[in-house]
Length: 307
Image (cartoon, rainbow, N blue to C red; front, side, top):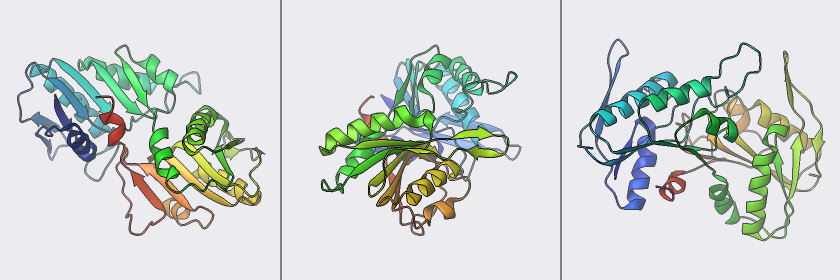
């Protein structure tokens, strides 16, 4: 099996190779002055099973759309070079929130990205904690699988969980209840605890986010807020403030994808939050030395198990 890691996903691919006893395959990436891209394998892939790790996300060197084009071009290139079976592992899948029409004339961009990748000849696609699993699976005709990070987070939390404390797993909005409930069950089983659940009412209006009703008992409890991503942090901040007003004991925030496109200092320096836990699915632009509450877990073990 040949394994490549594009851009910042090189780190995840390298860790997977180490766990599987493989050598990371060599390639080169170029971006010309006119912004054209060129990504080339430096190894033969003829008749090989090939895996490409590539988050579709902006980083210090390239834009989100650069990374999307780069992945598409490289998959096409590998097929041209004779790859027998081609798998794309995309820890962070951009445009995942454009999975349905909120207005009659809205585009279904997630589906268009899926169609683009399929044109490359990719045989299967793996992603990590996609925003809407059903919409993601329906967007692809080739096999497409969502890997969940819940066990990774639970393993980390189990090392510091005090069985004498009361815990509540909370979804910061109604849309994330199923995700939070899955996590609650795994966390409860792994730690041997009775874990309760809660969620916060939220709906969007032209003026922003509305709704503040908290469902569930959080007073005096240790709260674990679970979400798929932190972007601007507005949803998380609302949930944290609601829990604080109800006099909870502590708050930890788990999110698979840490985008932190806005309000990162407000979030990560908040006295109301004890710890943030994310994965390395998204290129992190923050200095961990300055944000000691932030813990980044490698998602590589999740992919090692399924390759």
